[in-house]
Length: 60
Image 1 (cartoon, one colour):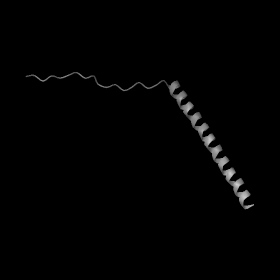
Image 2: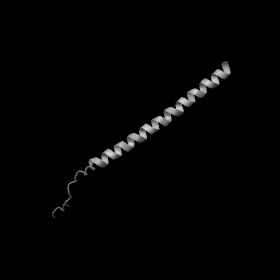
Image 3: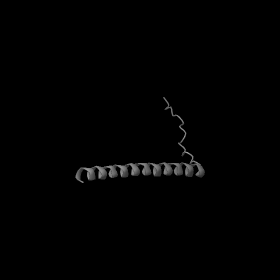
Image 4: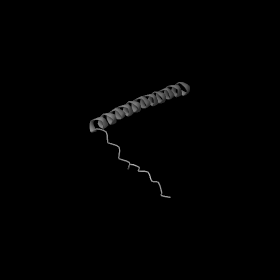
């Protein structure tokens, strides 16, 4: 009895996205990250300010 073999195509590397598309995606992610950093930083500053106000009212 002869062995049955299948011809499996070799995997090809996925094509890289166009440089313009990659640059656009990276820029979008960077803008979103900076915006999130700004929102979180602002809220953190607001929380610290509220703590200072409450502490001064309590001890002042």
